Figure (cartoon, one colour):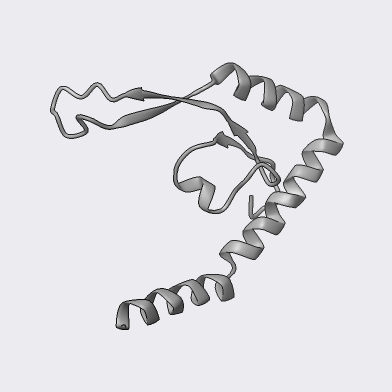
Length: 101
């Protein structure tokens, strides 16, 4: 994203802190129970992405250079806005100020 490249990613979890439907193609997910023989993740769910949707999205971006460039530009702008040094330092400062209370 920071390099201006378009992104196809799951529409679930931490990546949504810095990407949305305007800056990436968000692949739908189906939440399924985790199967974990060791029991570490028992009771949790896994986001199983719609692989056909992701493949179709990638094919669409390959076939449409203008859409690919536009999405890459929006992705880069989003990262510059949300993850720039000044934006990150403001988030850290806010967290430290809240923690100090």
